Length: 273
Length: 273
Image (cartoon, rainbow over all chains, first blue to last red):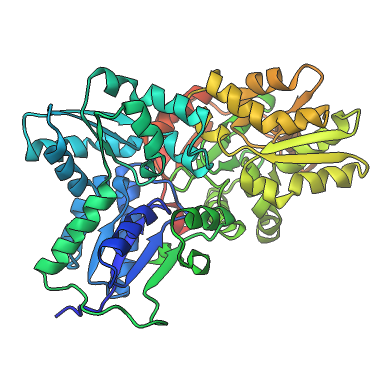
């Protein structure tokens, strides 16, 4: 029987997944979490299904070795390309960010026109469209890759005329089609949600899969009777961070997302898992 | 004794190194070349010395297994972080792109003010500055990281108002200081040399390390009596391409740089080397 005190494993191609971890910390504050960011091989969003699946599998093996009670794939690209295979390969309950985001979008839309923005890999998998249509077959889903959003966010241009200009180009088609719901299908995008929201206009609801995923994780743990009952004691390492590459850039950017001892992240050789 | 008919090995974090390969193909057209692009783990420019050295070492092992007669590190970041260690570890003659670029810059400058633009990693190594000052101690070297140039080039925005605006920001300081020589210290940058040249103005000479590296490679092969005497026969696979990830994006971008059968690149699991 799984120990309710065991930690939750959360992983991402890099540090964008910290936006998901932050939601989990907020919604189920008693849980212990082990976060892994594959900073040596980031990004995943421009790479192939085979490579993303191989990398994700190694990380799941690492998290299994840490006896986690559940795994959250906090990366849209890994959720899109690898989740089905990972589910078959591990006995640990595992959820991604795509299904919760797709479900929320299908519930939110009123005019049946949903936009999805994400990395090139996530868009080429067409997985959001497929999940949304399973929930609500009649909707129209328009997907758009936004490859420059991640580098712009990582360069710190969260509010900048250049980010505005690029966003206007990426989003023009979605505005023309008159969507009323937009899924932020990459963990970096909530960091520029103000820019995206301003350009899309007030009538468009932005769906943040990070929030939905934390909610779904909580429900899963309740259902499986795996929810932790008491908050860990001080000094019990409630949150642990592992990365495959400890660059300065990682530290600075990570600390701009989440202010919790990221500087003490351990470096892990994940290729060996 | 090394076979003069053996191929030259060229590697890069991804496909930017094809700009170096192109120069080599042009300057010593009889040589066979094996190109390796680490497309599964690209980019290197935002990662740590340890990670870049580990990845580079694996690639050198692969190239050694192909019995290359010389190795060109066609990546500025790998040249900056890993070349010294690689030199100690391999018996194959190995050259990077940094020294040839630095030497050319030190010869070109008249007013003794040299700018270097490159990835965050290359700039943080301060290696260009160090090599240039070894050649010419009195010069002033100003280095500037340009992290958005690679994503902008890969998004195809080679001539675009957004690239202009970002370039103006990155280059402003170098213009103020009145440099007369600018090193394009990342293999992607020659692809936007028109934009960079226009912003810097006609009085600034742009140094392309790709060109200098091919020249230095030719001199090295001559000196070591390793130059190939005859062009390979048709069907003798003069140019071979290996990548660690064969994504669509790679193919499209690679073919925009070099038009030589990139579509038939082989995928290699380089972690095993």
